[in-house]
Image (cartoon, rainbow, N blue to C red; front, side, top):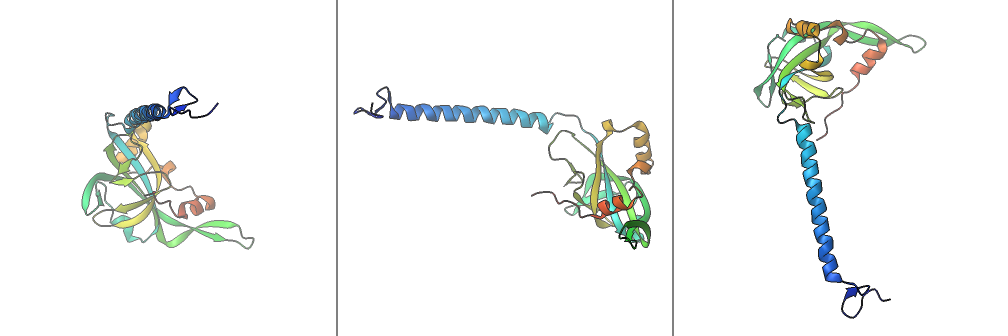
Length: 207
C-alpha cells in the first residue's frame, strides 16, 4: 500500500492537510494545558497571597578591621541601589578572627588573629516566605551565598549562614535577637575545620 494515494490521503484514509491541522490543534492544546499547569504551580509557590512575616538572615563577615563592628548600630537600615531598604540590623557579635595555621605535621591548628575581627550580624525584614527567590534588603538570600552587607556607614562582603522565618524560631531565640544578642549556636564553631569552611569564597547568585 502506498503511503500517499493519488488524492493525497495518508494510507488512503486521511488527507495529509487534515492531519497537519489535527497535529497543530493537539500541539496548541498541550501548550495551553502546560501553561495553565505551570501558572498554577508558580502561583502556589509564589505566595502572592501568603501573609508576610519577619525573615531573619545571619551574615558572617570574616577578618574585619577592628573599627568595623563599632560602626554598626542596632536598627540601622541596609542600603541598596543608593537608598535605604526595609531590612534592619537586629543583632551584632564581634570576636577575635579565627586564624588557621599549620603544625609541623601539616595539621590545621586554630588560633586567633591578633588584630582582625570576625563579625556576625543578624538582619531582618518582613517578607512573604513562599517565593522561590527570597530577597532581604533587595538582595537574594540563600545559605552559602554572597551578600553585600552595606549600611550608611559600612560596607563589606559577607556570607549568608542562616535564613529563617519568625515562625521557625523559638521565642527565646527571637528575644535574644530583639535584645541585640546573637545566640551562641549562631556563632562560628571554634574548630579549624569550621574556620576554613567559613573563610572559603561564598557562592555568587546566578544571573
